[in-house]
Structure formats: structure tokens, C-alpha cells
Length: 570
Image (tube, rainbow, N blue to C red; front, side):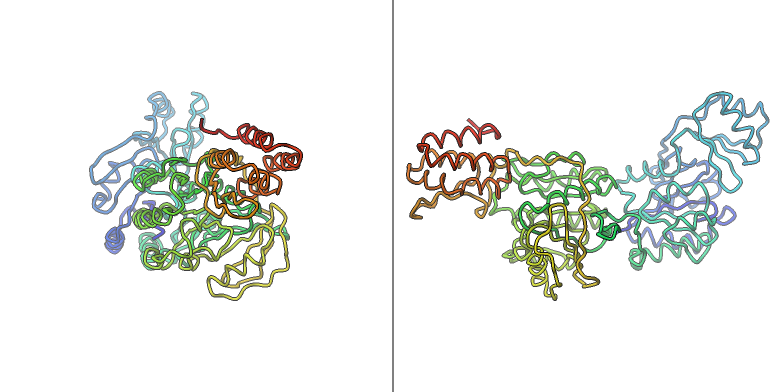
């Protein structure tokens, strides 16, 4: 379920000539019975609204009154001021100028727009920081920054809901702000032309009948028929100059390709734009690649994996996203760990619509092709899932069935797309590129809607720090570990990190050490699996010198090289 709340204006939208008819009241009741929430967002003062609309408390979960200046909770009848009170000096000056009619609320001062000149002169003469809002012949004065959007934001925070799971409906000028604030906006048929032009949906019916029409659409199909292009997430720029974007809701994305091809840069940029757009995400970070990201709460470290309760505790706040460091969870236990977390994330989504996105880096660690219970644990379709991997075929096929779009990067895009197509049982596309330059991706849609599209990846702002403690202490997977085997292949000593590498380096015999230090294997491991080109370049020099150095000399040089760049426990 995507949309869990509806925020509606009162006069001219829900109400006609100030009254809400019986059919509309029944529609409001059906909507709440579905488990969704209703929020009334109005310019009216609360007492005036309650006198006019006696069914208020029974119909709505939350009320934003006075155009954003007051919050009211019907179930508890609690009131909360969201702005400074109206200035006594300002009100007195308006009365002195004979501004009439004049209505004073907790934060709002209201009159007719025919009194505009008197009001503006008063504000100017007193040097006050106030804003004037017009609404179908009415004029409202509020503190700067207080409007229907700010009031709705406060209401949603209190309800632990997100604007991305909220639909707004209105009819007049003062509705623009909160309609734009929500993921989807609708205009009733009687709305002003300017409101209709900016709305995502223009309803066929007027006033309360139009609101009932909107609620029916939400209950029937969660507005799946509405295209919300304004929320799409930027991936990059096509060769023809058009932007390539990811829909904000729907099918998943797979980012795949060879090591060093730019997967993490693309992923980091995506996370930045999700954070900027206030989408909540839960990102699985098996190798500690995103620990410098500033737009999320970091959980876990190289020694301890976080619990599901800790993760869900962070996600309970719609304003916070989480990056889950899994270096403290051993490779063998990661699928089991994720199998316990995923149903709880899905349960959270069913209740709140969040996290909006689930991202799994090194997805073959958590969702391997050997995962026998994948078909049982996973829902038939997982929306808003981003997977990152080197090899699509190493991911459980039920997971890949939720992927609608794949972006290939690196040196072999044809093999990457073919591997994905074979895994999901579709015909692979024709690919002419044998290698993609860094910063370039090749996008393809599983439904075959078009040929693969080459694009320039949008840059990211976050500086990714690869030189982290994870390579020093955390356990790398067997396929990324270094093995001391000796010149005759009689040994099988695994170094799963740099600490182990130094320990084994000191312990192996001279012949074994010289075999590996002179073969170029160590610098290749640094480059490919430790992912540190600077370290690899310096290691190549030491490997070349190893042909004339003694074993002890080359060992000392490697130790100095590593310890200069990594924190090695004493």
C-alpha cells in the first residue's frame, strides 16, 4: 500500500457552502475503515469549524486549522499552537484603520481581500515579518513560514507518516503549498484553473463528491493509474541529452557489473537524491562502503551487526533513513540474518508505507542463488528494491523477478545483461558495447520496451572512503580473500583481511613468501579486492624490488606500506 493518508481542504473542497453532505461523510467513514488516515487542512479557526461541522471529531484523525497555525487531535481533543500568537499591536492597528470584518485566531488574522491595502500598509508601518495569503476573496495574515504545508508536516510527524504516502486535495490559492508538499495532489472539479493546472489529478466531480471520487480511486487501486513523474529519481543523462530517471514507486532496479566499474558511485548518488527528496531508505552495506554518507543513521560496525529492533527503531521516525553496516556479520550468516529482517521490513511497509526504498549492496551475500527459502520469505512482488552485485546470476531468482530495470557498468556489459536475462527467463538484448568507460552506464528494461540506453551517470557529492577498517579487520568473502598456496600449491592459507595477511606473511616459509611477493598476486589483490589503487601501485614497486630483496626486506616493506594506510590492531 502506497497511500495511507488523505489531506483535504474544507471550504470549496470537502464542503459546499460550508456544509458536508451525508454521502461524503459515508465515504470518509469507509476510507478510515480501510486503515487509512484522514487529515483536514483548513484556513478556518477551530471553534468556528467545530460549530459548522459537528461531525469533525468522528470523521478525522487530525486537523490543521488556521492555515497551518494550529494543530488539533480529535481523539484526545488536544490543541497545539504551531505559530506565534497574533500580535496585539498589529490587531490594534488594524482596528484603528477600521479593517472590517476582522477575525482573530490563535495565530491567524483574517479579513477580506478588499482590505488588502490597509493590511499591507499596517504591516509595512510596523515593520512586521508577516505574510499575506489570499483565498477566494478572503485575506489571511500569518507569521512568515506558516502555511498549510508546514501545518501538514507537523501533523504527519506526529502521526509518524510521510508526505510521500499522502494525497492532498484542494480547490483554491492557499492549497498550493500543501498540495505540492504531498506525493500526489488532486483538484476537485470546481477548483480554480491555476490549482487544476498544478494538480496531478483533476477529478470529474465537484466539492465533497470529488473527494469521495478520489477516495474510491485510492481504495480501488492505490492510484496506480496516476503518473507522478515529478518525483522520479535522477540516474543520469542519455546521449541525446534527455535525463534518465527511476520511477519513485514500482519495479526494482539492479545495478551490476565488474569491479571498479562505478556501481558504488551510481549507488551513492541515488542515496543522495533519495535523501534530498525525503524518501526513507534502508540500505544494507556488507562491506562498509557508505560509512561517510551524511544523510542517514549508521548502525553496526566491523565487530557487531545491528539487530532488527535497532533498525526498525530508527525507521520508526519517517524523517530518518538507515545504513546497516554488516561487516560484523559473518559471510555464512548473512542470508539467515537478512531472512529474519526482511519480513519485518515488509510488515513496517504495510503499516506505514516505509521504508520507501530497500537497498542491498553486494546482494549475492544476503540473497544468494542458493537461498532455498527465497520463494517462501519473499513477497510475490517487491516494490522499490535496489540490488547491487557483480554477477546477476548469483542472486536468488525470486528476488530478480521483482527487478524491472537493470543498469550495467564496467568492462563487460553484454555479459552482465545476458546473465540477468537468463536468470529471469527473458530474451537478452543486443549489446554492441564491449566495455563502458567509468562514469557511464547501460540501462535496459526487462519488459523489452526499448533497446539498452547508454547514459552518463549523474555525479555524487559524498566522498567515498575505501581506505576503511573493513579491509583491515572485517572478514572478506572467500572469493575476495588472499590465499597463500606456495610454489607447488600445497598450502591453502586464507587471509580474509589485511590483519590476517600480515600474520600469515610473517608465518609462511621464505620460499612461499618470495613466490607470492614476486608473482604480482599481492598487488592484484590490493587492486581488485581491497579496492585501493594507490596501495596496489606501491605494492607493484615492492614486488619488482622483491627479485633483489631478501624475504625479510620485502616483508618489512609490505608491512610498512599497509600500516601507513590502515589501522592495524596491536
